[in-house]
Length: 423
Ligand SMILES: Cc1cc2nc3c(=O)[nH]c(=O)nc-3n(C[C@H](O)[C@H](O)[C@H](O)COP(=O)(O)OP(=O)(O)OC[C@H]3O[C@@H](n4cnc5c(N)ncnc54)[C@H](O)[C@@H]3O)c2cc1C
Image 1 (cartoon, rainbow, N blue to C red):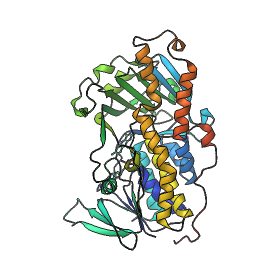
Image 2 (image 1 turned 30 degrees about the horizontal axis):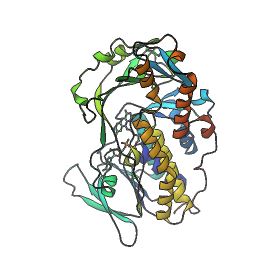
Image 3 (image 1 turned 90 degrees about the vertical axis):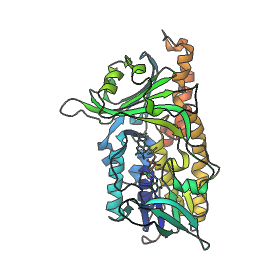
């Protein structure tokens, strides 16, 4: 069975490794860019994703790439604490929560793919432009190339997995009327700054005032010889008065609006001022879909369920999709039935999570507190009961599958393997 994966992001690469781990061998990853470069800033692998990467024999190496996050705190813009919860192993989970640089994670996964599947398993400069279902089953995949004068080309596959991100060409072929990703009228500035460790060195901080929000976490567990660690930060601004705006490039209000924001030993203005490169992005997502799998074609990761960046989930869910899909292909003889089973297992849950994130996910507590106490508070219990805060956190963890009880269950995507390694 020939499987083509569009996109060598975290989702596509984990899919390749997962398919290989169940015994599938004819796998080709097609990546649009001519060269995989370590782009982006920080991403989080929640413990449910680390469990699955551990099952692929990758977790140990990844732990060395980033920081294991042991706590998450929500604060108002004055640095007053709203809520704190243990994370990763500190929450009772058998696996850690890892904060890593996206580029480092992608590079490590690409290395593992080439190591296990062969040096030609990833083809770069191969943009999937669409596909046509073939009458006898399978698909013909269209490819465009950027380098040199290579003409567009075609490739036949038994299965096509669209792991080609927010602006997926596979998704566009399945849903030609859908159009551009949905804007939330929010802009996000992201950066990585070498800085002194804060809050004990393993904490994630989310602080905000209902209009501006900052998410900050370390990308290394131990300081370098300079005493500093790379710290990932993202500052976002909502523009509720103009929900269609995508004015991320204007820079309007940033960084002035967050200057003076402090939270214990964390100083946001120092972080934003000293970042290597600060890039603004519009905050985009996609609507939940009624179906991901159509015959021999399916979607995975952001291509299937791009969600607003709340709860640090996107990378985790792409990993889970990959493992689910491989397990499904290993347990059904007919790939069309396998893809439909994967859709049934993953899509309803992701549909719910997309909507939860659109409503600000667990970070909604910051907005609630700001509405009730815009000038700050004496005791958080006078603003919002602890039981309500706990309920928001726990119900989100369950929805995203990273609550310790769920994580400590055996992986639902463990054995079986296909009987013939050369399948
Ligand atoms: C350059 C980049 C930087 C990012 N930085 C961050 C960040 O700092 N923080 C964060 O939280 N999230 C970031 N993300 C998003 C994050 O990686 C994803 O939300 C998450 O990891 C799920 O990954 P994915 O594999 O589904 O999609 P993606 O990570 O978007 O990967 C999709 C891959 O498909 C390739 N591709 C796109 N179109 C085609 C096509 N037609 N044919 C073939 N290949 C195609 C892309 O080049 C990319 O390699 C970034 C994504 C990208 C692409």
